[in-house]
Image (spheres, one colour):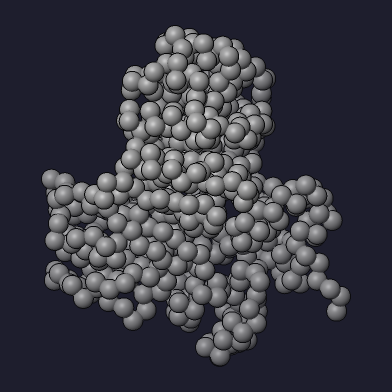
Length: 559
């Protein structure tokens, strides 16, 4: 048998990818340890169906799409759920003496042998993509059915026996509440949720996921089930279960499908009981190469130049959940080459970066952003990252640090790039100091990406055509949108990307800051000097088929 052709070489051979795309994807694989095929799908270079086709060629096993099958839950009873999840094997059809299974490559021969032993049937394998496997599990091991089983099992009796370590794997043999917690966490991860919200209402409790920035209702639980579920999560997050009114924060780690996740948990009392939020952070996906953030080429060039400056302040701004931390981490990781000392102040430390000194804010111990920043200046850093500028004291110390030869990165909450210097001036920073220290501002939002599996062209409506041509100067007749498929949970979108404003502080803008000029004057000067404003950046991505017109309208108001 000849040597098996590697997937990248196979895709290169048929012309689906370029050598440069393969090189970049392999470099990212080194950082994230994701499968090459999944990276290419995430980048939109190939579709999931194309990936399945070429994986089939590579392994000499036919590929299928699960959309062609009506999955039979009864077949799943032939195999334990933990086995299906562990080996990523889906039973799809049975004949008299054969069971057909869909597998995520690479296929484990021992897993197929185990299927044969457990079922007593011959095994015929097919290949499917990772995303199709996850969606199949969501349909068959339905979270609502699991919740109903738990509600039936515990009735109206509150339980404390579930208060043990949460692991987001199988829940087999554990108590009902632990099984429910595991199922909710696993389901949220499989659906690419960034947050799980557990919201108390008058007579019930809602469980909702935030997926690609949009909230979705998932479950409605009776109080008798929700209260021990909340207590279980709080115990694992190191929080006080007896305190139900005062705000609390905690965290715990968990593993799911060979990936490690960090869960940031926040709680607060409401008029109907506790509200709990779990922020899901993938430790593998937090570090993203700069080129994958979503900046336009001209924005990327400006930002790459700014972060190579020896000193000054670079601010990243946007609302909560807009990807500011990811942008800061990407910049820090790019500069983390071993020849510089990098120190960060964070609240919380969301991802541990080897080679970077990271300090957790602890206000009870007297470590605030301002006091911590003053202290680390004595530790001889070259580059400093401040998680957030919240007040005058922190902003003053950051300015002082930049003026004494440090490159300072920080986040701040403003609506766009031009309003950032105005915000700092309003905080009380001296205009001449700000003008001397600020070298760049990045403002950003996240928009959903059109699903690569079901993307298709459509003819523009007149209003869309008019707005796009007016604001970008590009004449368009057709755009892209998603039809909706199993891969994207029939939303037409899969994943998110950033839209940005990258403001480089030039002499003209520096002069405006020194005179405490208005927002409008700074913005006009920025656009006049070549800055692509955020809405235009978003609409350019619409013309490129990356996102939808409705997405840009949702996150950025008309200029």
